[in-house]
Image (cartoon, rainbow, N blue to C red; front, side, top):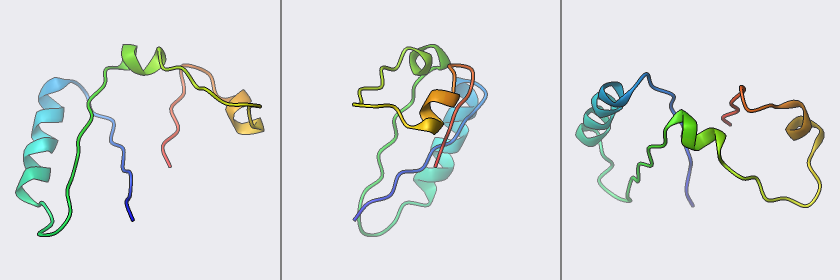
Length: 67
């Protein structure tokens, strides 16, 4: 079983601060992976689906959804 968490930060330095905090609180069992992407990279993301859901049609590139 696994979980996915997202966090929006203001720049590289802010990301490093959160990485240090995360590193100091790692679980004894399991693993943690961190993927950092820029806003430009995120907006260039391609969504590969059959038919878009209603919610996906309503979200544009200026909006971000994290669940």
